Length: 280
Image (cartoon, rainbow, N blue to C red):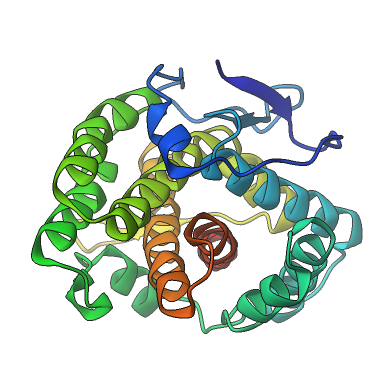
């Protein structure tokens, strides 16, 4: 069952990361609108899906960090925004992680204030090559397929339906650690998609109001992007950053002999926040 919480309301309970078996066992589809959520309260919902999963934990982290930043945010530069996000992310994992020292170390290694702009957005749109993570060919194939499926989905329910086959293949064909990397990453992707579909427009408006522009095909003038066309590109872009972050975190956990879901959460949540503030 999906739980819906509104952005800006405190989430009173902490989360419990379930085993990867529990993550994969979540089979009910979650609902999601097929159009941008209004930025006018009370429609700016923060959606928590897959209750008890690493994906839910991801959304709790992202929402808590952004709510904290919104309280502190005032007129200032993009650099000030990214620093506030970084500080809030570090403070969040310090308070909530089972191993705070390890969590803070992982989050501090993420480059929250990397240069934004077209080059970074273009890099995020490229098909990921997960061979660099030294995963098996089959795990690499499944993860590349997951990244593609993110960009052809228009609801979290649709994405979860697509990814259920990837989860099943991971359990059937991969070793336990690789299966956990894949299913933790797909859990993060589904919840990330749900969260940003509900909240990207609101946070963009709240933290840094701006108008997006696109060069017209005719080349005569710049024309404002409609919310619908710019919106889906942003949701896909942030969700893919989440997916890749969760994979990177999972691989790092395997090398460190640490908990894969927790690393997937910390790195995936960080990459989600980084990509979002680059696009704002």
